[in-house]
Length: 140
Image (cartoon, rainbow, N blue to C red; front, side, top):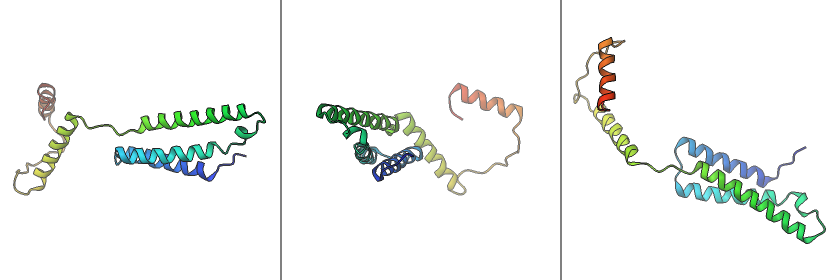
């Protein structure tokens, strides 16, 4: 039966928190760094409690096993950190975000843009014009 230490459970919980923050888009650089350090510490504490590491009578084997486990944990946590590192916003992303905000503000101001009656299904001509505009200038 697999016996999980308290530190191992905390490391998994912190890793899940980092992962969910990344997927929700709520993480930033400092939050990620702090949580990765905490997760790495919990992983090291859990890994150093493995009895195999300390079971040898020869001190050189103990050093070797501790070094092996610490290196494996640090590489694994570094890989996870690289995988979930927050992506920087590019200029194109910032511009698209500003355009979306401007469109949303215009929609919320009553009377600024007259509402046209919307039909349920666009005609073939409207579809072709929309495709032509989006391919030609990239503006809809």
